[in-house]
Image (tube, rainbow, N blue to C red):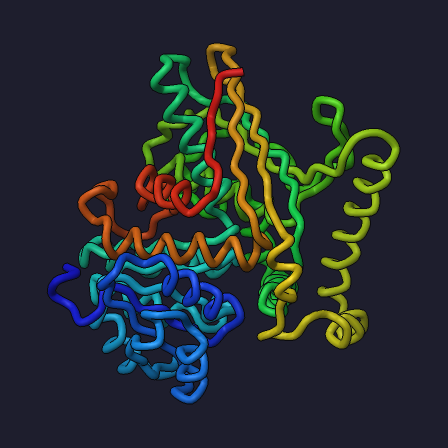
Length: 407
């Protein structure tokens, strides 16, 4: 396909906070000669982003398109092999872009962590994407690439060792980084949707909410997304804000793969807060603070106060915060035979922005350039089921760690 289209990769939303970071990564790391274009609503703003890019980014063509203009989206999608979009919140702006790509047979990737958007996109565009050959891949940043690829690698190692299936898998997450207005805006959208529509609230609580076929899911009880503070091997843990989304992506990958990981898979994520009294206190503070934030976003009077102090769309962490950030996932797994494995996924840079720009950029290059190495699948997929080992290899080359060992 790549030889038949004007571009190999289009970055839509290049003027957004994470969009410009992704453009910078592509300019520095895309193979020479890769045909890349930048897209967004404003040519003037696109030109300013392009002017700040290192070579060869300064020569990339620009595409003006808006999510309210279906003809422009159709032309943009038809012009490229793969399209990355940072235009969120996706529940507001994402569905027309998915539709354009599914119709055109264009591979698509986004950064969503919005379960109601992902569910609607799956329901509406999985079949058209299968028919056109498009890979529609949601959640290709810190939400949810580390989680999804780590469990895939654990499965592959367990399978190679002949140790049955994955049974209990727990990821203990540690992070350092900031938060942007775009993330806060997405959280507001989730809160608004759950408050306005009971079905959205029910979907958010369903551990198999992104399943390809909900009725086919096993009755395996899943770990809580909102556990009380407790200890895991001597270290205190608290709820991890993205567990309620990342776990759904992992379970969807398992289902798409025909439950190759195991129908008895129990997968959970928690935030590591440290050892001893300090770890215990931190776990309590995190638990209370997260509950208060989510309640505040759902309460009109409190919401107005939070709106004045929380970051606005387009705002993000400082360059120093991005550079000093990092993420690390330590994953413990037990198999159906009783064997134990560990995995570690880590990377430098603020996870939601600097590291996410690497993940999204490498996803785009993988979809655009690595077609002959990708799983033979189309439709609404996940990072693990759409790209799998090819993306792991790219991210390792980019400096991220993906390791698995027998315990």
